[in-house]
Amino acid sequence: MTRASSMFDLIGQQDDQRAYYDTGGRGRSHAFYTGEEQYRREMERIYGRRWLPVDHVSRFPEKGSYVTLTIGTGSVLIINGDDGIQAYHNYCRHRGYRLVEEAAGKRQSLVCIYHCWVYDRNGKLKSLNGTYFDHFFDKEKNGLLPVRTEVRYGVVFITFSDDAPDLDASLGEFGEFARVYELADLKCVQAKDYPVASNWKLVAHNVNESLHFPTAHKDLHRITDFDDAGTYELKGDIVGAWQVIRDSYNSVSMTGRSQRAPMPLVPEADLKKINWITILPNLLFGFTADYVMMQWVWPESPSTCIVRHFWLFHPAETAKSDFSHEAVFALWDKANYEDWELCERTHRGLSNPLWSPGQLSLDEEVVSQIDAWVARETADPVENEG
Image (cartoon, rainbow, N blue to C red; front, side, top):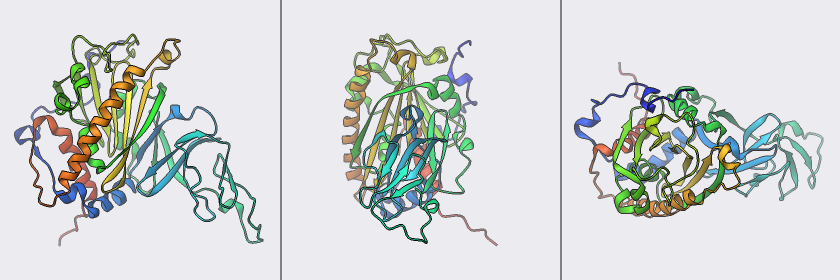
């Protein structure tokens, strides 16, 4: 298949005269970024209602492979069962004991060590060792509570709502990026969780702009050009931007050099780019020609969150005896800790009720887009007048 010349040939027309370019944007209030009421609305109207991307299919290679995830105060178990990948509330139906604490692993049975209720990999209750088998008890009605689960482009999605917005419509043009970078076929070679003492939106801001690279990320700035970048205008509940890799490098890593073959469908003009694409509310992709980065931010409270970071590579490369991703991991692990300090200090600043929002530059359009989307999703419904 012939390579496209650019991702711009594969997605919708971009409006270079859009309104943001007239004035830029502005930040929002102290209450919007750090307030308890705003957080409650986000958990109810975004994280409680929309489809949420939660993992990648390569992390479930065998039956019984599982991961766990904390969203707010809730815990979710995602497991590869006999009918495919399915999510459940990670609690025993007996008394609510949290079943699995490990972040990932493989199990064929899930045992509640409180009263020894045992579930299979399909969420069905197998036995009740240690509790009475009363005549009125129905095992079929006491399995794990399922969470609606779908897979698109190798990404696992869940929703807690029966009336979530249409998933495919929300993804809009994301499928073109997923197809070009062969997202469904890639292999996750490492994952890492980072606790951050910051509101989740500030992390989403941070990872969607590169203005801070020269001062905060010397290694990234050496390899990428923060000034040779731009914003996409994308259809769906997605936002994105692109950034160019400097001439003397071909990979975003500590060395800046890679012997890995570029993915065959990546357009010519994008072989030297990072395409930063975010599925709202909280999953950032760093699409590069030789690997893909996935980074989630999961809210825990108005002032804390967990960032989960994946690094994915083409299976043709991971199968090679000399495959190594250490230079990639080293760059991003260092950059992550640099970012979390920025986010935490920003959160402390925005926690001051006297803080007043300032002007955003043209290079921070995605920051403005994220805020506008969250504001729309959490706004009170407009009542019909008359």
